[in-house]
Image 1 (cartoon, rainbow over the protein chains, first blue to last red):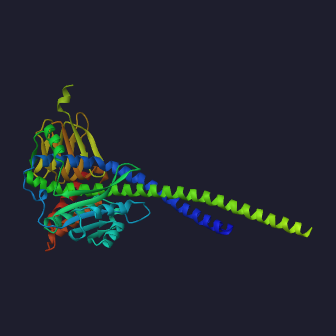
Image 2 (image 1 turned 180 degrees about the vertical axis):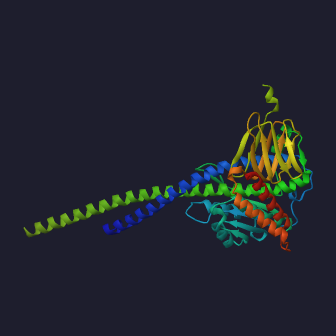
Image 3 (image 1 turned 90 degrees about the horizontal axis):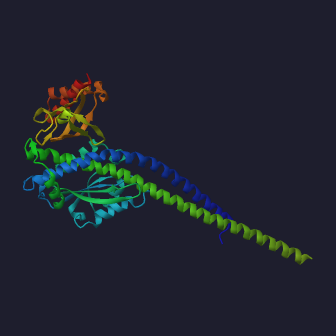
Length: 287
Length: 136
């Protein structure tokens, strides 16, 4: 049995760790609240953007626009959104796993635009080429950041350097459930059935300027808004994941502490009993 | 009510918030093809926004005015939705900053260099002018 002093020391160290995880949980709870409100505020914009673009494309299915067909290159660009900090449970590794497990995204045909250093490091280790890395964006994502990123990625697409654009991020379903997602952004692909539904309910839409020019202008905005939405959701998910991880760490620590307290008391009792036995044995030997 | 026939829904949505939701009898805004005014029962139209002032006319109430830069508008017979990248109320605009931005853009356009993105500078100038205009 471990000595009383050892148990006490271990208990102390667990207690201080628990204090840290507790504090981190509180911090991420507050951050989550903020991120969640923000995610809710931005939601209408994306829904509308998605609806508009879907209904536009539903009517322009035969159009021969560069954004609608795959580029010449075999290479694929993937924007990977992770966090800069760890201690968020499986948050970062889930995204990395999703990317590496995907058959479309092999290390030799993929260029990674990394947001968040954790994902960048992990993908670099696995032999992916990191084309660009912006770690600060995720701290406080703004629409301008998303637009800048979109410009770079679209420039590579327009120049034929990459043939497809993908996006990997964590979808924020609610506070307790977040789902890593991998989306193909360009060339645009939509669920055929979904389009058909929209088609029947929609009126005949006119475009000004022409349909192609409108697509030229709207698709970059569409991609930007998806990036922005993904960033906002990723921040919310990160804090949600961290809150959960810290919550379970705190309760695990609690469990360990109560276990150790029991052991400590038993050891103390044991040592008292032993002492007593020794004294009694000594006394009886004398008399 | 007789007036119902003239009233339609207006929504202005930006990435950060739902900027404005309300009713209107007419809305004016600036598109890439020039300024337009929309009444109820307009033909369905999707158009690209240019930096400009949005004026929402209401029945028996004061007009609502805001600055909108970039984005696009979807016009349906009974609803107009502006998806704007940036939208601002007049009192949210920092006039001094806008003046500075105007001076900067003008300066850039006056001394053209090879590296200058003329379109971008012109766009910045237009945005600044709209802001100054509406903040008055």
